[in-house]
Length: 414
Image 1 (cartoon, rainbow, N blue to C red):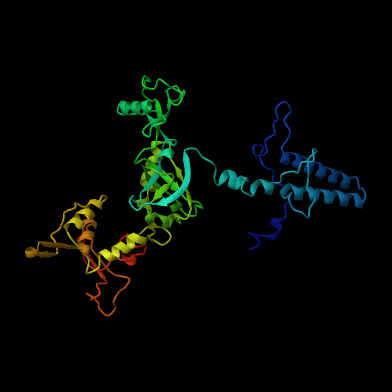
Image 2 (cartoon, one colour):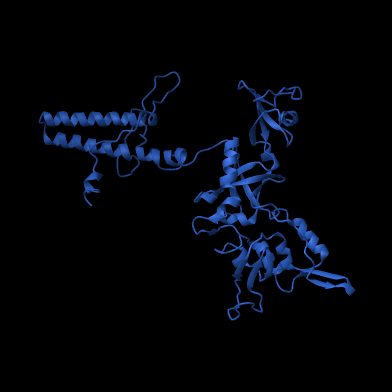
């Protein structure tokens, strides 16, 4: 439609001029401020244009007018692009190459990537990631030496004064300590330079910048951040070592693996920011992907293989094994009550529980019917290979749990 999009619009008749704060004058100590490269070049453009107008009004020779027109075209070109090998570069009076508009925008140090898309921030850390299946998906293992550097500003009240006073007394060298104290007047005291920490009085509304501790809310990120699940909220778990620890099931949304990948950790610096991360960005709130409307987090690797082996028909466990597995169930809203064994031989003192009974301990109160990945199509109700998953009131009655039922499939239990 030529009314909405016409080729003549690609020809500039009015030159765009950036605002002064984009091209501030260069200040050198002891000298007068000199104009920015773009400001200097804009002045040349105005002078060339005015000279061309005067030459046309005075009816000068066509050769001189063409030369002045070519000079104006070259000035406009180098104003936008000044790094093409085929075009002579514009320089200042000191023979310094002028930085054009395109050079200021593109590249890693340009305005887009260097200032607008992302920038360096405080209260962040970066390290290599390692796998740890013993932590929850909403947790991240943080090395101790990083926890001593990253701080959170805790406001002193009557409720927490004694606790924060103990952290101040511990100082910056202990894990449960603090680095700075800011009094209500805004004066900041470094605890590494203060010897009288035990006598320091904490007034109400003072701020203690304490070390990172267990269960603190943090943001974990892996670049490139291509979708919203590239930055998610976690609970910090302070650990030994020098690497961040991550549950294997959370690697899919981050697109991470453990061959040397590095990830970033950010500590929110206010209670409002922590509340937003906890209720919006936390990993359990990001399990369903908006792209496919299905789970993006599910069991992988050894845990997925263990689910299949545990739910086979011929898998049975004695009382000691059941007790050990029950001790591992730490995150469930269900009251854990050990059900009676499915096989009882009193004469031989044999009491056996099936692997399906282990899963029934922590399954929520749901009803679920699904065909396993290795389904026997000839049997509709109860196939002999036990490939039909049946859950009633949170009890796994039949079926093998595999990638289709506990993995990242669309209708999985995840």
